[in-house]
Image 1 (tube, rainbow, N blue to C red):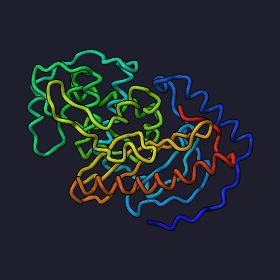
Image 2 (image 1 turned 180 degrees about the vertical axis):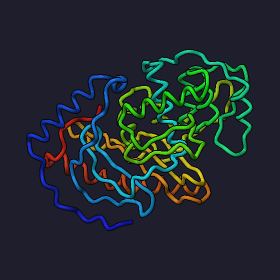
Image 3 (image 1 turned 120 degrees about the vertical axis):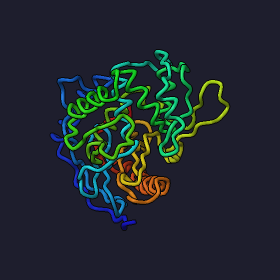
Length: 323
């Protein structure tokens, strides 16, 4: 861990803060993010606080709607493993909006998804052919235990083929200004799906504007109807230190990854802080790599929870509360 010295941060000019507030207000207008004709503006660096960045890989931390707190590592596109599923969920919820509490349409499990559930080489969920599950439940099974077979099932249901769905994913990435991102599958199992921490934090900000998405990624456990087994979230940071999401990822070539969200402060001083950590312990066993990403993120989150309330109190953020 790097030493956590405190850098002197100069307040932003009032004109800049006013401009940031206008940008954020415009962005909040749509609950599901920008339309296909709009592009998300690049994040702004609003402060330079010292954070305990991981020694390897790359990372970005941002106060949602306000600006980047800092970054580390070279923003070179790298495999992101199951963090890919955040874009899968984002595209699905834009195409099939759900209100909080709604289950959505019933989707029949096909033979491919059922057969893939027996795989010993990737993360899957034990679904049965002919089983009918709601869109909401399948989104949970994709995001919470990271079911690759469910991600591909949902892609086929939405677009007919996974390839057709991937075109939607890449189109959404272009709209969000994710210039260094290429999706080649809905699950992240393919190492050819690559991105950067900077690109993924843009997606995190947009995805967390959706209430159903927020509730799903903050859920610690789920289950299958008629199955007594508890299916736990792979994000073991949930439920402490204000962590409310978002998604883990791991693979031998991808290393460990985590896209995270944490609430900091309370009342008018509350802020949503987003972070992405990629490429931790590349080449290690996936579980060890994932734990490295969780540990690196935990250190960042601890530091952010100490620093951001001081910045808010000093008037060094744009003053946009947690949504």
